Amino acid sequence: MNPTNTVFDAKCLIGYRFDDAVVQSDMKHWPFMVVNDADSPKIQVEYKGETKSFCPKEMSFMVLTEMKEISEAYHGKTVSNAVVTVSAYFNDSQSQTTKDAGTIAGLNVLSVNHEPTAAAIVYRLDRKIGAERNLIFYLEGGTFEVSILTIDDGIFEVRSTAGYTHLDGEDFDDHMVNHFITEFKHKHKKYISENKSAARHLRTACERAKHAVCSQKASIEINFLYEGINFYTSITRA
Image (cartoon, rainbow, N blue to C red):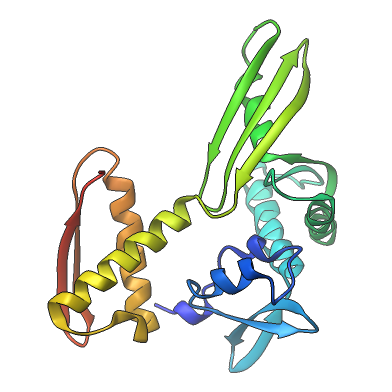
């Protein structure tokens, strides 16, 4: 309903300069504004009639503050200590920025773990298994990562890790949106991308279809998508 002020994927900006190719590429898919502030990217939104700009660390701080409040509401007491997970492709500077955001949010960040490692720890918590080597295949909304860990007597050692920042759930959404924008253009001779609200409605429908298509053929039905035109189509897993 408010695409230009709905922010997501902010962690994709941590540690990058505004003119980095990855930032310029991602900006094409985001409905919100990213501006250049002394060669650093900042997210710009309108709030109560004012223009506000936030750096990636500030966005992480807001997310971690919200997570802290959710945890405290669930446990019914103050939460002070936390283990924060970051993407495996994060370098030391990016991990430290995330840790700093946690400190600003009032958390004592005990450690910063890579997400595949954290997944392996959770997997092993209630299993009595001897020494083994695990391949962690971690495909999420924002990144794709694979790590090989050896686990022996409670000691986790990351032997190798690799990943790709643009093979993930968001990229599936991007490709689906582009596919259906082309289909809509062929059917109705109109280009949806000119309207951010229509493009956002289409993206939301694509994300729902992506979830549904795991088990069946998915239908996409959007009433009054663009200039009063209804859009009905479908997609298969293949």
